[in-house]
Image 1 (cartoon, rainbow, N blue to C red):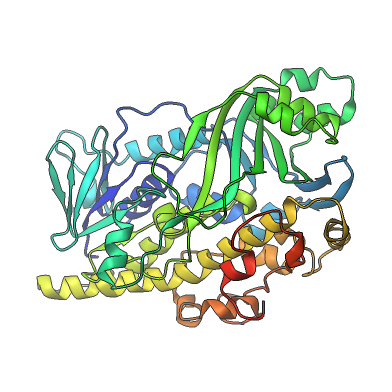
Image 2: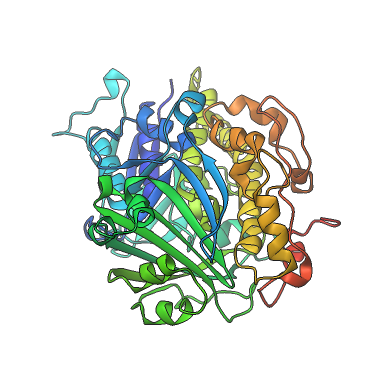
Length: 496
């Protein structure tokens, strides 16, 4: 098999996934990141079976991590009335891997340790044994791409070149706009989703000592609980075998959804005063208590692209986007990191399908072959990630409703068992199978799925990769809590 030198920009989950996937096939991977050193940052992350099985394949030691196995999802009203319960008891048997709750820092650390097994040692590499190498270079902020060498330049003036460059540099990727311009497409800016998120980690011990059994069970029974109310919702689940409780609180803010997001408007440290004030009237006691607990608060503005990105690969065929640089999405389906890992698996499979029997010495033929492989990678990933992004937008509309007819409709629909009318994506067995059962390594299915228009995503279209489920319904237009462009306009689908 022909092996490559691949430069990966970004050493987060996207970059590490890419490195692990490609090194397993013998490629030499150089990972660059601006961070000076790895540190424990972040909060909880959900690792569903469609990504869990990839991590295991890549040699990431999940067994050594303190984690939780998810019992499923619960959706609860702001008055603490259970509306919908979706158990995951059969997930491992059905999809070949469990559904975990993990601290993000623990996951990144385990991925980094897996990457260290591929580190070059004293000039010796494992390429003769069919394994590649991974070199992770910190304090290496990339400031410029050369899309034709291809290569990248760091802020210190160093150039790194290879056969391919993968831009796994996150939502604020500097490569994305260049690729859009190279395809002579209109700008596709990052825009405001209308929501901000508070990510909070608190010790679980106060909850475990509570006299109320239902409060203790938030830790001892590892469900992801979603409390929904006017202009906001909270999600909570335990971490590290009950040591911590992870809380994500998403609220509607007062800026117009769909407006471009400036560079200085991303995240900041926050205290719990504004949360306590916002959730003090009418919300159930447990949500008020969670808002009032002392913890590390980080407030994030949630952004997404104005429209799904169709072109992930530069016309040169030598540079491609991967992860949040290509498809930033809101966290409401807990699939952001999973889709990043699927990207890496699909990239590996697409390259393997083109390089397994490659024997030419022609540089021009190699460029053509890699361009074809990246085109296959793109065709596999664009429809799926665009559809999942659409579903996060649909669920967003239902989560933050005021009490009234639309909220009553939501509560009724959420009570329906295994029904496509239920706005919770996981509540439909067909949708759940499509989400968790996807095997990103099987790029052959893209011959049937890759060319589908996004307008077709709301229909049940069959193919080797399984049928694409219908989008869940939307609430009535007048019920939206968001100023600015409504979701029907954002979806850009006539008649939706």
